[in-house]
Image (cartoon, rainbow, N blue to C red; front, side):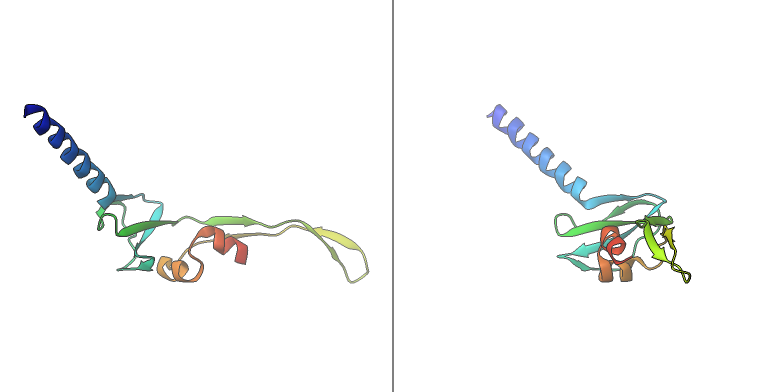
Length: 116
């Protein structure tokens, strides 16, 4: 009987730890978060750093950078007006100003880089 209580207590503790771990998310000062429920955004973007709470197992935290991001394109040969070819290398620096709109349009940074 005593062993059953110990095993039951251990199982309850494991379930409590997993639930707590699933309901807490930490936002770094260089991040912003969109909370989604079944794939759709709920609430306002979280931009303040710290520990935050969400509904466990139902909601998901989607992290985005606040800092400037870089994209480096491939170098290409471009003809000039006098029919010479020069090498042109392109790059861009960009920042996510509205994380909710960014999530609705491209979902993640990889999707944004393919559009650049």
